[in-house]
Amino acid sequence: MIRAAGTAGRRLPGAVAVLALVIVLAACGAPPSEPAPNEPARVERLRVEVVKVLPHDGEAFTQGLEIHDGTLYEGTGLVGESTLRAGPLGAEPEVVVSLPKPLFGEGIAVVGSRVWQLTWRSGIAIERDRDTLAQRRRVRYEGEGWGLCHQPDRQRLVMSDGSAKLTFRDPRTFAALSSVVVTEGGEPRDELNELECVDGAVYANVWHSDEILRIDPDTGRVTARIDASGLLDEGERAEADVLNGIAALEGSDEFVLTGKLWPKMFRVRFVSTT
Image (tube, rainbow, N blue to C red; front, side, top):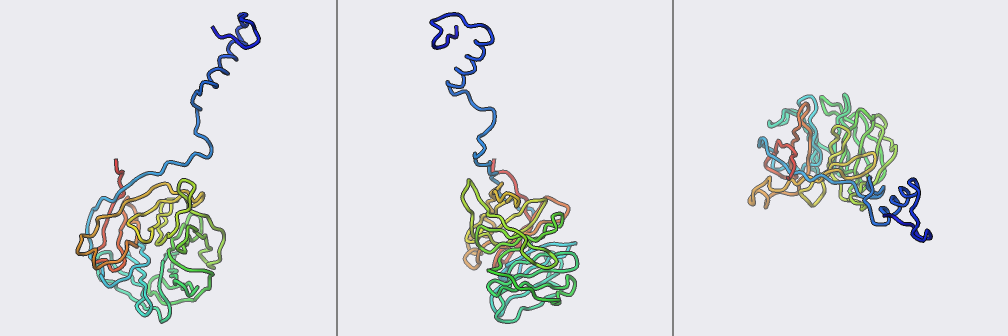
């Protein structure tokens, strides 16, 4: 029988007894029906499943990768060696343009009839014609340029600078609109590199690692960690640099991955580790 302090053991009326029962259960640590508001969101664990291996220029220092209307666009880096290339997936590029010194090419994004190409430390974004890759104009921005992707439904570009920050930019003027800090478990995740925008999410290569993050760009929260290790064998790995290059294959659940100085590209799916 439930008794309350101060009643000297008298039986309680029904309604009061129910209230006392609720109080006792709460005091005994009954679990809450919902998680605490500040409880970290679950981060999904995924890995790559290779669908097909494709050739890749082992001399290309890949900084940006995108597939649009069946054409693969690739931006490469290094001073004096930076290019933007376009052509069929798995074949030699049909159009190649070079960046003059001292520009160091970085991420790219196709926006309608144009392609935006970042530079690393020059603070210059180059707007190009999508078909010819000819330069249309240059726009200045503050800080470093690393990765870039386009969210057409949100009418914005998403840009990384090597930190934990993503900056949203106007796709017409390249003006900064706002920014968000990417976090996992409440802690910033920095060294965000090449980006890909897919179905409202942003996928980001993490520099110095074989990890790709899936990010909710509105909150900055990491929603998935993707293990992309093991794509190259030991000999290939010795001659290559880091994983850097992610492009979604339109109309499928597949992505294309490659890296700086990698001799191969990989069509992959992201699948659960369990």
